[in-house]
Amino acid sequence: QVQLVESGGGTVQPGESLELSCEARGFTVSQNIMSWYRQRPGKEREMVATIYAFGQITNYADSVKGRFAISRDEHLNTVYLQMSSLKPEDTAVYLCNAREITTRADYWGQGTQVTVSS
Image (cartoon, rainbow, N blue to C red; front, side):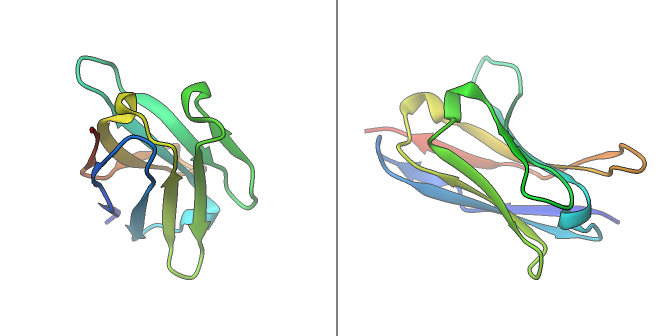
């Protein structure tokens, strides 16, 4: 059974940084596609960052390029989202997504709230 356990959300002021973690259980992050999505109030769910299998190729939404960085630790089987220069419009529930490259099955974490407010 696949489980994605997110942590690291919270409330910060504009310009500050925050790191989210997504620990995968029953799933190997290095061999599949891992992404972070976010759900902002009144908006559709959007992809924020993706890291592809077996390498370091990444992809980012234009709105976060240069501010966010996705990475993974193969030993801890965990994916991270380092967020810096946070803005109020980054306020959202952030969700970890895992996609199996063989079956294209999608798995989701429960989400973690990030609030950027002065």
